[in-house]
Length: 192
Ligand code: PCA
Image (tube, rainbow, N blue to C red; front, side):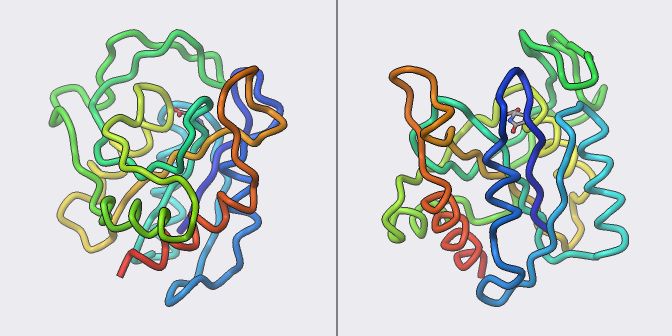
């Protein structure tokens, strides 16, 4: 199950969903099912959980935009916090709030992030493990899914992608959609 987000915070497009949509229905050994998520705390993760109940996927790989990053970045960890200077697409805004009150501080992704980042670079695209998925909706989804699927056989992970060249802010990195697609294909093939 692969997900991408709708546009948020004034971005006119979200390359995470554009990339998910453009990927073929089969990559390596995997059938790819796609779901667009709203950039809304709580609701986005719940949609993934509901969809996964029907689909029973082997892997859930969520994608999001991290404007300003220069590489495609598998995320190592989700943390139990909501804290951002901008509201989500439903107008919710949080500062220093837990996602799951009393829940564990953090979870590691259950995907092989180092192998995925290496595979991305081998495909000729900048790739690196990221040690923070932020404290906004992407982290909310990663943490909530790790919490929900802890101890279950479904593996869970997240990849942040850069801005497209045409949307990158002055002086910031952008990456063509076809490079993002090549990176994601390599990352999926590295899942084992
Ligand atoms: N990126 C945001 C939320 C949606 C998206 O694509 C984030 O990094 O939290």
